[in-house]
Image (cartoon, rainbow, N blue to C red; front, side):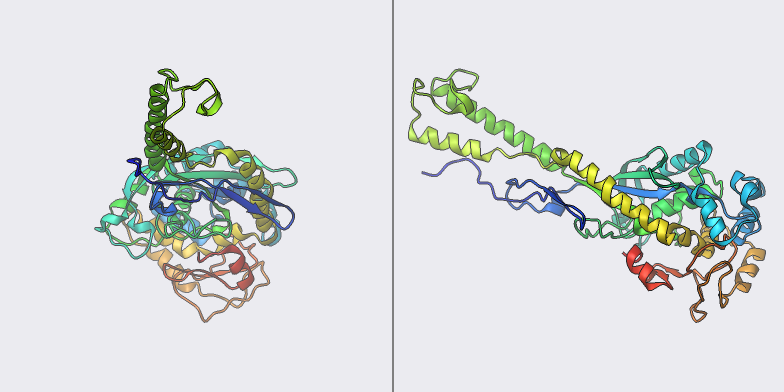
Length: 431
């Protein structure tokens, strides 16, 4: 006899499975899902975490090309008065990098960064933070639900201060936050929009710009070239299935009501609670007829658990801190990847500062940019520069001269290209 109850298909919530060469763990749950369940389509929002050192908030060095450009755009800009440069203006190379790594961000700068990030919250046109989209493309409209910034932390065994930026959004586009990471469970098509959000907020903070200036990114019809922040710090924290879970909760309630109704008709009381546990008839309960038994079993089997990572929250957090974030900090300590990034985006930073204000690059700064060509060697660095590549993202000595390798390219199509190919592969800079 056919039942009127809907049939349920099967799906798997991959839950949480983590591995390491030092330690192997697994904590995962297999659950049954509704018919035609597709994981990435049922995921209606995601949380990403971007982990970064606070020395990225140090403004460009006094007299550098970037500082000169900022001063040309804003007469009140004075990086020489910044505490860090007052104490370390004579340092170069490894000594400068060491000083940058022990820098702690001040409350005012961090507050300005948070305020700038808050301009992303809501529904906006993100066409300027991705590629292959135009201003009028309706698919460029995306919603960011919230952005939170954690308090700065210096981890045991290190000197560098770190913060986390947690993005919760409906969906993200190519390059919007940062780029594909080896730490992500899946390579989702929308997981790279965040890179430019982090970069844009950082660079606006560097220039002491009004946070509301960020709104021009949405409204302008001019393509702005926004450098992409390093991929190293990005982690997909959690895919969320809110819509699916709401529908599932309603369906589960209906099945529970049906179970209670069947039990009530069988003489087990109006509450639907059996005299024995788990609604299993006891010896004194009136027996159910075959049809009622079939309905009862189908209703029980149709109840599904919600899709949630909550059962593994402790394991995830422990592993994340012990292995993922520890590995990020180790890579930064050994390779200085965030420092190399800031040293290699000078031209892009200058053009963005002018473009977002709707003005051209000042003539004197443009003249200096044209004069700055990749030299045979970067000051304070043993790395030779390939002078065959020129154009957007040319390497300029001037912001600070402590990087051990130089970024040459920051185009929308190519991503960031390192001279050091081993570092490039490690950083996954191109996503």
